[in-house]
Every structure is written in structure tokens, then in C-alpha cells.
Image (cartoon, rainbow, N blue to C red; front, side):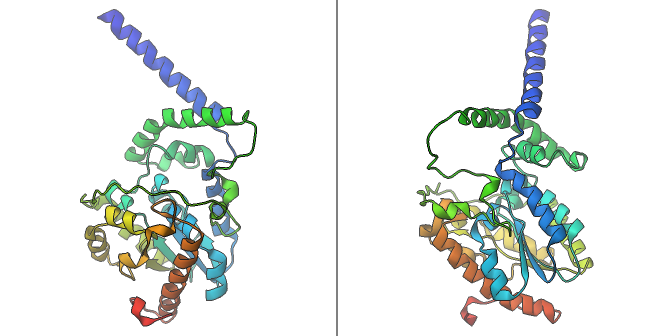
Length: 321
């Protein structure tokens, strides 16, 4: 028995050691999608006012045309959306440090965050920490550390696959998640050149309970945004109808009302036909981006005006363009 325990301990030690070496030795993939976060941080610090800042996951990154929004509303636009897998706690905490009086902050949170605590997921956190040079690693909470550790082996396998692809010859005709796919506003635009993929809905309706810790934290940090003179607009994320039917339940809307940051529009208004999907329920194709951007402009034109006069009007799509 003692021999078994010793062998098991040795194997565990080797496993941990190998993964640590691979994590820090192979993961310097500077073209990784998550490296874009560093660029987005620069945008928060350098882009002048007036400005609208989109906070969210990849739904914001893939679905918004910031140039068109800028030209239509007459203000600078920063797309700070990146990946739901890193959660919402880190981006919103980082954004708070660079917020300025007069900023309009549009918060579009993918629905899963309301149920999983907004702490991120194992498949994204290790790569994200590497991409950001482990900046402020000491601010991670226990849940984030647990998910980070769980994801390290998977992250190492992904890096090994990436390393192997360097030796692959011939043109790459498939869409690849990379930081080079973003434009100067922080929009992911490279996917617009690829055909849509088929979406396979699970047919399972989300009936989970809201994570109350996340809701309380969200209310607290959004209040800090407004204390610093910004105006917060809570909007549902763009997605396709099948994704919306699976991911959303009315507990989200009710929870936001309890912290006094209700949606300014009915969540179903941001759900587009399945034909507008690119490769996931939250990623839209070229026509979907165009349609979603037009929807955003209609809503924000009313909301930004409301912010300018000290209040906000709940938008109704029946009110016209």
C-alpha cells in the first residue's frame, strides 16, 4: 500500500511539473486570440471623449460594427468585448480603472455569466493569464483559481497543437481565432470573410438559478462606474433565436431589476433569426452584424440622449428608427 502511495505521489508530481513547464514554456503564442485584451486595455487609456464603451464577451466582439456606430452617433467607440470564458469580473474591474466622467458604458453580458458567477471557464483562463503576462494574478478569487488550475492541462494540449501547426504547409481555409482578426476599435472582423456554419441547438431550456453573489457584485461595481461619472446602459447580448431560447430565462431580467440596473430593452429584441449565425449562437455573420449594429444604433440613440439630459428612457422598438 505504501509503495502504491509513493508511486502515485511521484506520478502526480511529474504530471504537475510537466504541466507547469508546458504552461510557461510553450504558451507564448503571441497571435492567440486572447492577446487582443492588451490592445483593448490600451484603447481604454488612449481613446478620447466623447466615447461609448461596450463591455461583454465575444458576442460584443463579433457582432458590433463600431465604425458605423461611431459615424452614426458622433462619438468614439471602444469594443471591450472579448470572450465569455474569461468571465465578467476581470473586464469590468479593469474597465473601472480607466473610466472617465461622461463615458457611456454599454454592458452586454452573455447569459451564462449570471448562472456561473462570472468567474470564467477552465478553457480560457490559463491562456488569458498567459496573454496578459499574469498581470494582477493575486486578485483572482478562489473560484477563478480552481478553474484556472483545472484548465492548465487542456491549455497545454492546445499549445502543443498550435506548435504542430507551425509545420503544416498549404493555405488555411478555415476560420482561426487570432488577435490579428481585430480592427482598431476592438471589433473581430476577420470572420466576416468566412461562410456560416450550421448551428445545432440542444433543445434544452436553461432553468438554473441566478448566482446571487455575482448579481450583488455586479450591482456594486456598476454603481462605482456611475459614481465616477459614467453612464451605464444595461443591454442584452446579441444572439440568434435558438441560442436565446436555450440560454435565457426571466430570472436574469428580474435579478437586474433588483440591483436597479434593468435592461433598457426586452431581451428578445436582441435575438436574431438563426440564419444570421456565423459559428456559435452568440457570433453573427456579416448580415447579422449589419442588422445588430442597426439595432444598437436605434437603441443607443435614445439612451445616449437620455443620459445627456440626466435620465434614461426605456426603448421600444415600435418607436421607429
